Amino acid sequence: MQIWRNPERVPADLGPTVVTIGNFDGCHLGHQHVVRRAREVAADLGGLPVVAVTFDPHPMAVLRPDHAPSMLTTVEERAALLADAGADHVVVLPFDREIAAWSPVEFIERILVQSLNTKAVVVGANFRFGNRASGDVALLREEGLAHGFTAEGVALDGGPQVWSSTYVRTCLATGDVEGAAEALGRPVRVSGPVIRGDQRGRELGFPTANVPVHDTGLVPADGVYAGWLRRLDTDETFPAAISVGTNPTFAGERERRVESYVLDRTDLDLYGVEVEVTFVAHLRGMLRFNGLEELIEAMNNDVSRTREVLGLLR
Image (cartoon, rainbow, N blue to C red; front, side):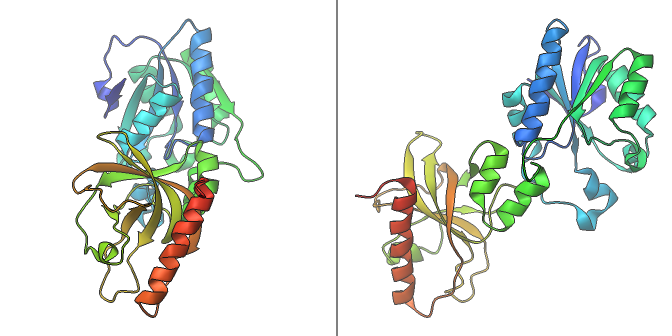
């Protein structure tokens, strides 16, 4: 797969293409359906490459920064997910106010015709584009007649709630990792290096692997979850009780982290190791306890419920 971070970098000899366009943040099942349909159209046209066009930053970050959503995935993660769904290449359009001012026809001529030699466009049925989002699938079809490409709008997936990046964010904001996973078509996961924490968990008999929370990513609401921790260096996977938050029981702690206690293991040395944390189910919200006894009792209960959720009861 090639990732072109500007349409001007697309090779002139790429040849005719099938194009799909969208933000594709999170690359949920609805996005995947659109890309798969583009793949089918490309096959019908003799095996043309499928090019996914996405935007960075998100258009709302330019047009209405106060209303811009938190991104679920980085551009690199998005590209990898699009490749898994069937895209051959990705064009990242560096969105700014100049591009925002393009008319729909200008967008079509500059991106679809001149840069990508498009023979077919496949998008979601609600796709809008161009200045003030004035372009739609009907306009794509109309312009396609003049420029030699077809256009298709794919019906939205999901029900009764339509799958969307907004829906996934809503699920994560309430800790509903199961709902988010259903829409994504894969479990909610975060990854990163294990950092050295304050080691309070170790002192309490529950040593944790701490991964810092960044501004982007599929991090659910503060609380406790059942899930899995996987070492990316060895591919070993362990059952884990996972805490997301700032440890409100201890005064002065403000750094938000994903802390994973690997069940029944106190011998793991994971500092500096890249890990992947998978959230399976929400167990409870983040609570402030009156003392260590209450905290330890709750942690033991969290571990028991984690065993139950993961089917590990002994």
